[in-house]
Length: 271
Image (cartoon, rainbow, N blue to C red; front, side, top):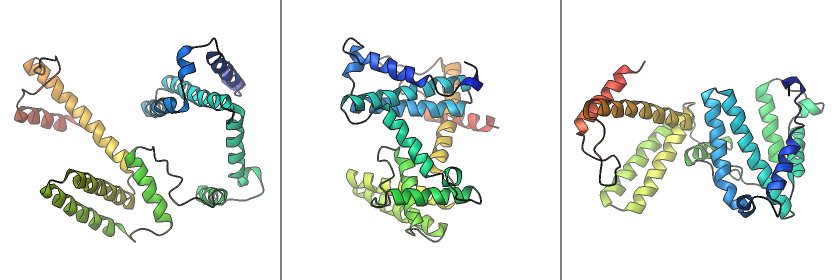
């Protein structure tokens, strides 16, 4: 269908298909699923959408959005089956929410720019959820680093924050000292707790300097992957590959000094 003619009219076909799969004579695997069992697929598909966005491949993005839409419809139909809600309730709820939170579009309110829009959004959201705590809107199932950043942002809005980045930097040093003490004691449970405190303090520090901690770590992971890819290529080139254990998996056998040399090559070759 030409893009100019696309108005979402094909979405009912996805609902119909899902109902067919969940029918008594439908797909056994689909019929065995529950909201709890679909949880991991929702996360995986959302992450694949993000990867597709980052890749710039619009064909890939189109495919992954379809996979994510399937999860939405699947969950809506499971809600329908237990008489909780249906697909139309899901769509209606988000439409009503967007209308409420855009009074400058659907009512007579005037805004001066994006910042004003965001202020209105937060005000309206707060009125809708007046009995919720400051942190109640941060999903527990978010990746921990991103969750820490959202929590840090939320409490800062009510003044639970240092006035500038110096306080957060001092907190990092304080938490590192407590981590060192826990390591010297050899208390694994305390080490885990103190390590978490260090990571949370680093997230706060990144926020104070206008850095997205998730993106910062993602960039480091990408660099590590590229550099280690070079190490692996050099090991294969110079030594025929990694030594293999009895299970056939790569194992220890290449000297660390050799691998460090390949790693430094990778760093020097980066633009």
